[in-house]
Image 1 (cartoon, rainbow, N blue to C red):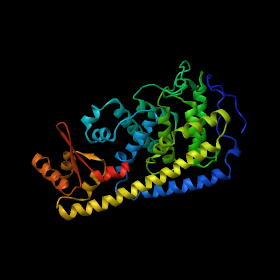
Image 2: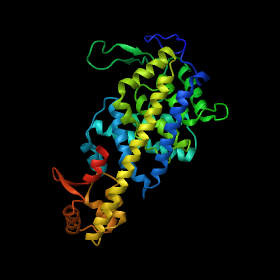
Image 3: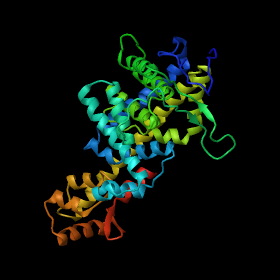
Amino acid sequence: MNNIVFDRNKPFNGLPLLPPPEKVIDKGILLKWGLAGRALAELNKNILRLPNPTMLVNTISLQEAKSSSEIENIFTTDDELYKAISDKIKEENSPPQVKEVLRYREALWAGYSEIRQKKKIDADLIVKVYQQVKNTSQNIRPPQSLVTIKRGGSSIGAGEIIYTPPRGKGVIETLMKNMLEYLNDNQEYTTDPLLKMVIAHYQFEAIHPFTDGNGRTGRILNLLYLVHQNLLTLPVLYMSKFIIENKDDYYHYLAAVTQRNSWKKWILFMLEAVEQTSVYTNRLIDEIIAQMEVTLATGKAHLKWFNKEINETIFSQPYIKPRTIGKLLGRTSRTTLIKYMTDLERLQILSPKKDGKEVYYLNNDLIRILEG
């Protein structure tokens, strides 16, 4: 690839429009595309094995939200997250970093609902996802916003500018319009959707259309596009786990496209992410289903009131409050609820955990699977 004109201290208004040159897609990439596409198809088929596929909202998607936020150096603990999603009051009073992670998950599922209705990826959808991720009313960053990307950490060179995204009147809008046309026009741009997602992810991060939150917004956009193209039934591909485990490579290959128009390693890296993530998420689903079946059999064998609906509920999130079980059974008596939870504790289906005056009940088998 020929070098392109790039100065990290100047706005990269010379960012090439999509698509990249045709010769970028070679045999090596096509081979990897085949493996990644097959793994993704297996995942999509496996999702439908779940008795209630949307139960993944509070399991795999929560892990995705946590890892995606960690890439941006926003850290929280599983314990804080599990408590928050099991109790609305706890969620409202959570630390800021917990709320950031939960907003990511909410933005993902709000985007999923909207794309199911609108049947397209457009600028309005992307802006809404960003606004929910960042809890802001901001839109595309204005021309006067002097946004730069700086080297993080505390080592030598920390704080120096490593990239200055495009800037100027209409510049970002033109680049975004081109990217969306590339994603949506399958007649003009006949590249396979999986490859389009990989290529457009670089472009979105290089455009850097918002003042902050571009990484998380871009990773949500990846999942929404796969759903839009019917490659995924639900946006539950846990890609952020792979990215955070290979964070240096992720940023290195992003920079290589910018500085040298070197697409191949970036595309191969992202296809590897899709393949490995699909295999990993498939394993999670297999283990969740197997554990659900054993737990259901155990509960029904020992408890007259235990049923399929209750079993699905306790596998819908790692922590659960007694009143959730009570609502399912139409019982609100504190004495009755204590009996139910004691039954589940005796069988080691759930275990109690005190947090001040509150008591949460943990599905340790589900936690083991999610954190394994």
